[in-house]
Length: 314
Image (tube, rainbow, N blue to C red; front, side, top):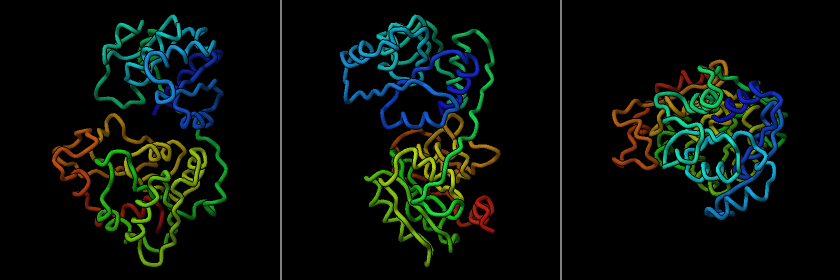
């Protein structure tokens, strides 16, 4: 969701050197941008507390030379890093007592998508209202040989960090039974392998199945998604990645607020399924009612023809 911010930033300041601080696992995704950035890996587990932040900034002179620091995460530690970097201008949204650490600040916006909220930080800095979001071009990614022929497989992702975003297996069975005769590839981390194997029970008889959980890097995952026939996923990071690389994506939205965080595709490439439960969006990681009605009330049997048509299965 932050990549439109990067593209818009590059369009406004084409001569600027852009330095990006992110968790080490996510830095390879910057290869998907149309321009290079200097990459600095940082993880709070490796460099904890204020001392870790100060030590990190002191060890990177490119931070001490920064003119402006854009603070995208809504965390206190990310604002503290901006102060420790020595950047003259520090731009972000007020929350968690961060206002004292920022030179350009505003209340967090509501009712808009997060990609738009990120880009509004540019308006906050340069004073130009209504900065137009620049969508990055579709990345050119080679196929992943381990996946087989391009366009001949459907990617399934039954995983998500939050339990309130995981479609129950009974609903997966309801969804997948009408999709017989397909080749399915399941994705996730190594910790998701067992959950993926459980999904095999939900697949139509005779379906080809391969579990690649833990077997791909994040950029290999991007290649796998980009060359799929389609992706069917819980609301998760891989779903956002699928939308970004241009895959046809079917995504289930449960507890999340779709106004702020729904996957944004290219040219109608995202089909969002939601039950429209009265209690949604609660944005809780666990269902407060212990019913998960935002997902269990999805009528996937009746949605099957629309899903087949969307995935161009005939």
